[in-house]
Length: 419
Image: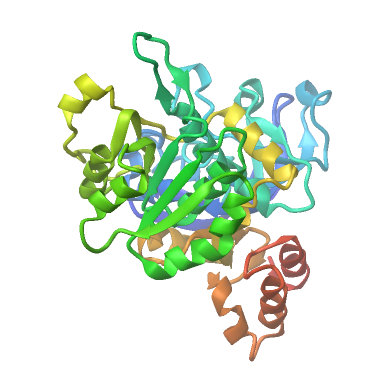
């Protein structure tokens, strides 16, 4: 079986190559990958090459397939797993397997599995760790977004609190409490807003900040205060670019500070602002992953001692988090399409990954079975003046609040230039 894939050889060395996959063993599964959502973590792996903790030291001679937010369907199931999985089944993968304590993961560490490929071989350890998840849906792209949503779910579960006189950590945000999401209208921030408004453990107050008024307005259109109020949450968007933003944030909390503060950008000033707006027993959740290994910020240890403030950080979600995100999506309680702003084919992956920090917008969704430059959904209408496919995609997305959707995916897969 031949596959086309993006392979990483070293720092900044990505190549689109076609090569032969070996026959599967009885404990492996052959699969077709349809979609992959490009993550900033892939950009970090490419920038660091073999210095990245998940990239193997021999990648220069045994290159790895990139991409870890993928969805597809099973093609051939080895004998060992024939009772649990079947050909034709849709699936997604939790890449953070922690197999025997190893950090190796699909999309970073393996020669034959990663999201930027047409066909892959799923190794035994993925199934052994119960990280191959069946996915019942009429779309593929939502399966790709289950992994980033699981990172958000995991972050909300990782926050913790205590009661005075008790050393028991109560996991999760304070139900009915006050939550702030700083720099919270990027793709992952939008997912966090969606989850905060629709999960089983909601805050009573949710304040979302950013310094980009256009992005704040888009977030407000997707998740309005009225929509939040229907779910019992007072949602406030706040542009923190002017004046004494910290004081204003404290005023919005009623002067008490916040039970839970999430930081969605690795900015020193933002971390320190989060520290200053924590209430008693407040938990600062550092969600953003910095590329600078020496990244640091000040933290008020007087408040740690006397107000029980504390900090937590997570890097990805676990399998239970992913199962929860899949369940909420399947029930229609979460719409991860709010994260997606660009669509492309496998031929657009290398340029997209290499320039990811400079490409504005949210998630870049890749369809591996087609050739297509990376295009912003917002540009479909303009491109549609001379291209029928883009014209129809623009109309479909316009009927869905400008968001990518199942109908658009099916139309694209039928009409785009296939490999």
